[in-house]
Structure formats: C-alpha cells, structure tokens
Image (cartoon, rainbow, N blue to C red):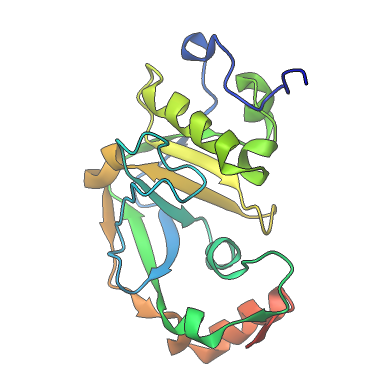
Length: 196
C-alpha cells in the first residue's frame, strides 16, 4: 500500500510556513468537561485526538461555541440516538477567556493544503492526528495549539490548546450542564438526540 497524502506530516514540515490564526485577548472558548477535571485541564493521557503520542506535553480541548463543545463531547458514539443522562450529569460547562494573544495553527480550510494535510487529521483515527499534533508542537514557530473542525459537526470549530499557553488563559467558574434545561433541550434538538 502506498503512502496516503496527509496521513503523516511531510518530511519537510519543520521548514514549512504554518497557517496561523491570531486569537486576540478577550476572545473566549467553551469547554464541556468532566466535573472532576479543572477547566484548564491539560491532559497527557494520549487518549484524545491531538494528545501527544509521547505524553510529554498536555492538551486542553475546547470549542468556539457551546454547540461545538457539545458535538465533540456528548455525541459519542457517532450516530447514537440517545445521550445517557448520567454522562451529562457528570459534565460541566466552562468558559475560557484569552488573556493575551494566542497563535493557533489552522488545521482546517486552506491550512490543510498549505501544510500537506487532509481532513483525515480531524476525522480519521488518532494514529493520524497525534503525530500531526507533535509535529506542530515541535515546529520552530512555537505555536499555542490547533484549530480544527469537529468530527461530529464539521460546521463547528474546536481548539486543542498546548500547555505552553496555560498562563494566557483564564477560566470562569464552571456551571452544571444540566443546570440550564432550556439550553440543554436546545442542544439535544439541534442534533436530534434524546436522553437515555
């Protein structure tokens, strides 16, 4: 079987110009996470899409909107008609505020072709996405993370933030995902899923 373009970072990736989005101070991200994790939790488990396969740096996942955060965290497995109530009860919503400018790699849109990637990076298996995370992390530009399309709603943009930007983020106190039933009903209706 031949090499699949975009499946792995190209050999000259460290010399390529990255497609960068500048995220200004005062921008916000939304994070839905387990209540037993801090809002600024930079995981090193290698269990998630852009985790470091060598487990040397941590990654915090969030989205541009509540809908994007919901798609990434609550719509698993893909195609499920019901979301377990117990899963939602164990999660909270946190708002992350950007305190100083962040530089994120646009691993979506025209950024894919510019860097030699394909959409498989955000929709394929983790053995594709994690090497891309590491290649981006060690790139000489020293960027703060990645912008990518949600695998469960590709109209939504999500972010994988590297732990090097921890001091430029401020977390608001989390609120229970089940605390606002109207908000929850709207999210479930958007994705045509029910509570199980």
